Length: 502
Image 1 (cartoon, rainbow, N blue to C red):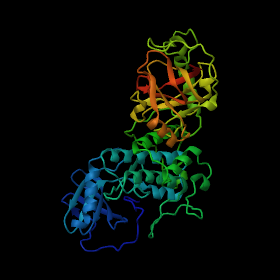
Image 2 (image 1 turned 45 degrees about the vertical axis):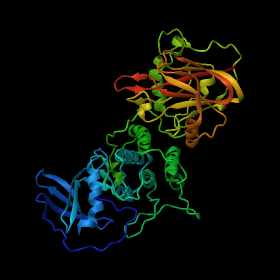
Image 3 (image 1 turned 180 degrees about the vertical axis):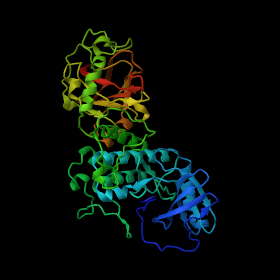
Image 4 (image 1 turned 135 degrees about the vertical axis):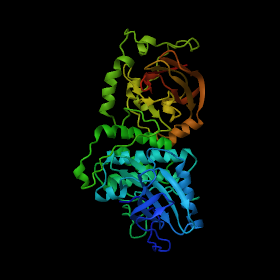
């Protein structure tokens, strides 16, 4: 049972004997040592113990001598004790006796990820669950201004009751938040393949990733059949030094959406893992986890979304005359300050002229583009449901639809939405930098807002006028109406887009 991790720098270290602890010894008149579990990569001993005051099991991470040599361990423990999160191991005490120093923390009755994957790699659903839990823990650490610095299959623990937790933070000055986020990608890679994408030394090293002649790591799908394309792409991007990284909070939210569907689909076969059935689902986490979002990163549709669409169809997509104030037909109409009606022949738009812009996500909400230009207000594109706040759960600046008008021209853009209460504006640009996350981020950072701006709009039609010629238009949505009250969930759909020359 690995109760603290052999980090990427693991090597063989001599075992010190001066001041060595013994079974039955009570430290600080409180913590009785019961069993020596292992020695970690930094030369520390890990013991299972008992808090004789509170009568609960604890893990004791002990090194000797203490003093200056234990400063990093103690500082990391003190910092970690200030962060409370369901996916982080709780730190109870940190003591320096001079001849030795020790950290007392939560005992996790289970095993490390390295032990589970050593039997057999996990499937995509369970790998997503592990990645989600680790990302959520890292997001909580980063929110305090700290970094973890030791994310490794030996520090990711899976409790027998199903909890996935991260242990053994370190306080090295050279560790960056970006290194933590890339390590999350490495954890998912290891879960899927059984290979660790960072070189290690020593007897306890993990199997190295498969590499080509140039040293490039093989993608998970090249190693193992059945890995979904969206997960393969996500992991590959996280491990690619040339790819810009999301924050830990955004990554945790994205994995949370994927994990939400994995929890619906996955059941655990205990025999699959011999005498150590994994049997876990993700523990509750702090970042918002919108329900019903598609698992795919890219163009992958879920049956769950289709079913949800049928259930809410009468609310969003009611036929004309149904009297529902949220339907496009019942409430469509420009606000009092909208531009006058434009009767010019519409500019021909097809699905090839549209794409979704999602700079803070993984561009997974891209289905339904064709429905925005098919002349039917009962079809269209919609976001998934976001929890808690109308501004995309507080985890995104917004989402939008990019329109390519074919050439630079003045135009009026009519947008029919699925419900009232949205906020949006129009932005324009001369060049589409690319249908990828980097391109989306460049658009939002550099394209300027022009014309009308709608805030909590009382209608479902928005009309935007572009008085100066331009080729590319972004309808940028920043907040959505509430569609469920308990819990509060927010969503918007774009049912139809019509562009006319000015």
